Structure formats: structure tokens, C-alpha cells
Length: 251
Image 1 (tube, rainbow, N blue to C red):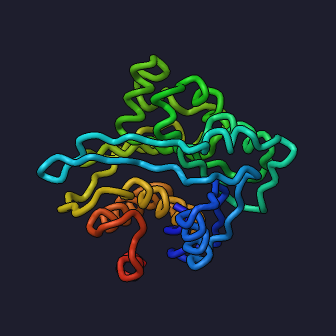
Image 2 (cartoon, rainbow, N blue to C red):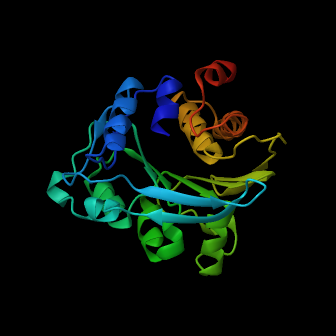
């Protein structure tokens, strides 16, 4: 999200974990080259987290295993007193460790907008979601994440989700229309059918373009359409970040 937004022209930064390995150094160098300032918790990991994937003969994913390599503990170890993010219009949480989410929300200034994508943490801990998301201005879910909330009896339909300051809820549903909940109404926004090359990062691309549109003060339904368009462009290339030529096509 940070890299995509930077390539779209927004001022962005990233608070995440780093490592002392060669990959960690390359990771930080990559962010600096993309004009994304990088801040990390005090605990430096020896190795970055890893996904190990095994594939079927047709190239589809057979099994995927995640190795944390100390990431979760690095975030949990950050004292509340040290949570000091630079000034920002929007703070976006991308599948962050739940206790860290709550610490940052507690420390965020009142005029800072919170964007929240709980991601895979919903698989392990639904309760933290109910504590954090009412404080969010934007909530992003995919169909799988939304179904987890339905199975946990937290919601029965998308209109059950708005709470307190949470004013924009977006649920992407693959090739089906995107659900947008705003001002107490549910809208369905069609998705263009494309021939995807690599769907990795399409959802991240959606969020990037939505936030870019919001910062540029376009109507919320237009933000969703921008997300659909940009996510589709990301899916038509290999890799999770949109290449510069795709950025130019989008802009």
C-alpha cells in the first residue's frame, strides 16, 4: 500500500519490522528508493517473516506455510510510550498485530483518520476486531474475511458493520460487485471482468487507489471504482506493486 501510494504521488511512510539479514537490508533500501520513509520497532529481527509455498503441477498453490521469525513479538514489545507516528492524514493498518493496532489507535491524534484491513488475523482472533474497528474511519474486507465475521455471528449483513466513527466500509468479493456501506446505505459497484496474470497484490492495489482517491477528495463511489481499476491493473502483471507504466495508464 505504501509503495503503491507513493508511486501514485502521495507522501507515505511505513512502520514495520526490519531484519539484520541481507534481505532486510534490501527491503529497507527498496523502500528508500521508492521515497517511503521507514520506521521500525526497537526489536530488529534476525530474519524477515517468510511464506513457503508448494505448488501443484498446474502452478496453483498447494500449500502455504508462514514463518513468523519473531515479527509478532517485535510489535507486541513496543511500549505504549514509544508509539509516536509522524503527522499523517490517514494511518492504514494492513493485517497488523492486534495489540499493536490498539496501541496506535490509542495514541493517534483526534484528527487522524484510521484505515483498517484486519486480514489474516481474523482467522486467529475475531475478538480483537470488534474492539478495534469501531474506531476506524475506513474498513476494508474481502469476501473471506467478511464470511469469518458472519460465521462468528458478529454480523448478519454488511449494514450491521457501521459503528461509531466507522463511516466507510468496503467489501471486495472477487468477480462479484463490491459492497460499499456509506451513510447507512449499501451500494453494489460492478467489477470489470479481466484476464488476471497474477492476483497477488490486487486487493492491496484496490486499497491503495481508494485511499489515493479519498485524499484527492473524489466521491466515495468513485474511490471504489478507482480501486477496482487499479486492482485490475495490478492483477495483469507479475508482482504486488504496480509497475511505473501501469501507474501512467491509471493516472
